[in-house]
Length: 427
Image (tube, rainbow, N blue to C red):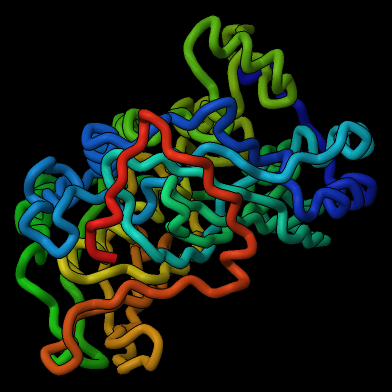
């Protein structure tokens, strides 16, 4: 049976106006992980599960003891970890504003398309994270090649901090909103050759996994690299539904809080527009397009595909492997213009574009990262700022937090029995 039904919302002038009124408040189309995050407090196991979820086994993140010999004197979390462990302290709209903006872009599909994040401090076991997130802008696009109709781009961003009042990161992401019905109709015009691999190609992929570069304790020095230098190659894939399940084990259910059985029934009462009837006539979530090929085809794609958050994790995995235990990924900007379908393999490489002794940041490298699939399409575009040690200028200095970012941070709450004091650790 074909997909029976899903809510096909429209991008209208009224919907855009409602979204504009919500600037400064959470984006209603991207709900936060409330009432609580996947991990209520950061633990060693939580960090390991999250890291393993996107295929990373770096001992700095996955071992309870390895980090004790590094500058951090502890296990730390990878840069993207707060996505799974941040309590929402966002500004809440009044009941009047909620009523006035009710239904803004309801039933309209959205795709995670990239963003930029600045990382200021590491996350340790024992930390409790809190953050604010809000709609920064909504921009209408008159025509979408994907849906054949109107579309819009929303930008959302905010600050994450720990229980000691340290700002961990500041970032913004953007989502591409399209009309579901138009996307399904346009699907007839799209032809995509999905992945299929020979034994020789599978052997090349296995060899890349076997030889994946992890710098570890071999400190990267500013003096030893320069513009034009190539970074090691990393492989991800061929992508399977199991890889998405692994991501969920580490990350949780994501912003929409889908879940099994009664939990999904309760979620459907909270977000009815996020559900439709599947080919069996049963209620099911829109999120299933990541693991249900029938539904993925119903909304305009040839098969299931990954999460944008997964590819950002891949980019940070690539960069943390390269920069090593003593380095720091300070900034990451990503652009995701192509789908990453189940069956696709992604080859990731990078190039150093510039090296600078920065007055504020110290020795830094500007790096470009590309992920290309077996069709020759670039499905991951990124650029990053890496802070590295120098024989002349000394170890990495963690960046200071700009005043305008500090002003966006929620007031820290006092520590409780679920938190620990790590103020003695190097900053």
